Image 1 (cartoon, rainbow, N blue to C red):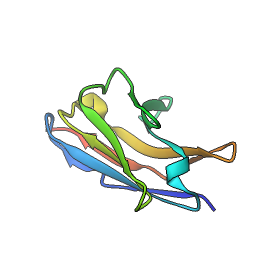
Image 2 (image 1 turned 135 degrees about the vertical axis):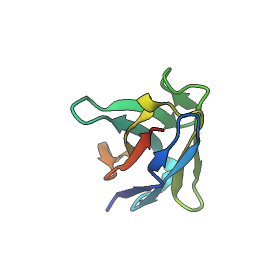
Image 3 (image 1 turned 45 degrees about the vertical axis):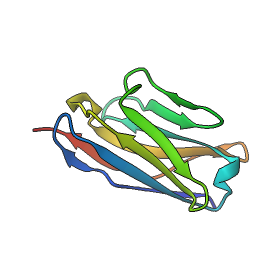
Length: 113
């Protein structure tokens, strides 16, 4: 059973940094494409970054966010630097496995002074 559990969200001031974690289970992460997305209530989900043979980033976060993983621990991370108020959202960890998409429950990130 595929499970993804995010953690590490919270309140941070503009310009600050935060690292989100995603604990994966039920599949071999070293064989999976994994990603982060985010959603503001009332708006659609926005793709943020993907970890595959190459890392890819949305233009809105490129140069500020870093996606990385530790497959020995089945963990995915998102280090967010130079945070802006517009980065405020619920952040979700996701993967595609066996032809289906799976998502975690999300973790709230609020950027505010």
